[in-house]
Amino acid sequence: MKKPFLPAIAAVILAVSTPAAAAEKMTVLLDWFVNPDHGPLYVAQERGYFRDAGLEVSFKAPADPNDPPKLVAAGKADLAVSYQPQLHVQVDRGLPLVRVATLVATPLNSLVVLRDSGIRTIAGLKGKTVGFSIGGFEDALLRAMLEKNGLRLSDIKLVNVNFSLSPALVSGKVDAVIGAFRNFELNQLDILKRPGLAFYVEEEGVPAYDELIMVANSKDVSGPHMRKFVGAIERGVQYLVNHPDESWNLFIKGRKDLDDELNRRAWRDTIPRFALRPGALDRNRYATFAGFLKQQGLIKTVLPLDKYAVELN
Image 1: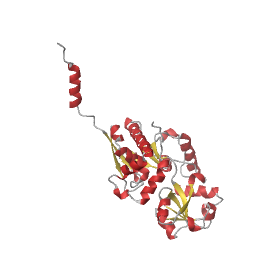
Image 2: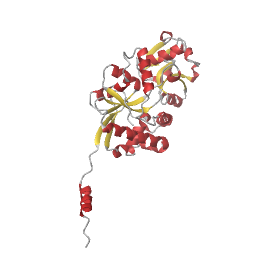
Image 3: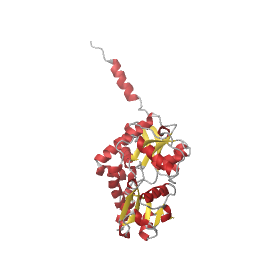
C-alpha cells in the first residue's frame, strides 16, 4: 500500500494556517495638496503595487508646504515629496536628507507673461513689474534669466504675490510672474481666456534640474523598504504612461474634486515629464545644479553627491 505523502500535506496545512507577513507601514508626506504631479504615487497605490512589494503606504498633505522635508529629517515620516533645488539648500543647512527617487524629471518652473501684453522677449521686461511667491530661489532663477538677456534684477521691480500668480497677472498687478508651473498656471490662464507666453528656465541660463523628488532621512535610506517603494512607483509610472486614460480614472478615484478641466489639462501636460526610471540618478545634473546654486549664493558648499542623493534601481 502506498504511504500518504505526509510532508506535503503538512506543508499545505502550515501554509494555510500561517498568517501572511504583515505589510511594512510607510508614511509619505506630499509637498502640497494632491495634484497631477503625484500621479505615479496614486497609480501605484490604486494598482496594488505597494501591496505587492509588502508595503502599506499612506499619503498625507501638509498644512504647511515647508514642513514635509523637515518632518522627515526629524524622523516623523518615512518620505517626503520635495524639490531638487530645495534639497540642495536644506542639506547645505545640515538637514539629514537624501534624494531616493525622482517623480518629475524636468523643471516645471517658468517665467510667464500674458500673450496680449506686447512683451515678446525677456529683454522686454526692462522697467516692468515681476511677481514672485518664494524669495531666494525664484530670485536666483530670475537673475540668471535676466542676465542671459542683458538685464539685471535692478532693471525690474519685484512684488511678492503670495502664490496668487495667475490672478496677479490677469488683474494687471504685475507684468510677469516667476515660479509659474508650465503644467498648471499656463493651463489656468488659458481656461481664463487670457493665454500666457512662457520662457522656460532651462532654455534661459538655468541648468536643468529635477522638479519633484522623493527625500528620505539619511539614517533610513539603506533599508529594503526604500528600494521596494521606488520599484513600486516605477511600476506605477510605466502603467501611467502606457494607459493615461485608465490612470486618470485611478487618480481621481475617491477624489472627485480633482475631476475638473484644470487638472485634466495638467495631467495631460505632466505625463511626458514623469521620470520613467524614478530610482536613476543623473549625477552630472545634480553636480552642475549645485554649482549654479553656489554661484547664486544660495548654498555655501558643493557637497559630495553621495551625501545627499542615492540611486535605487
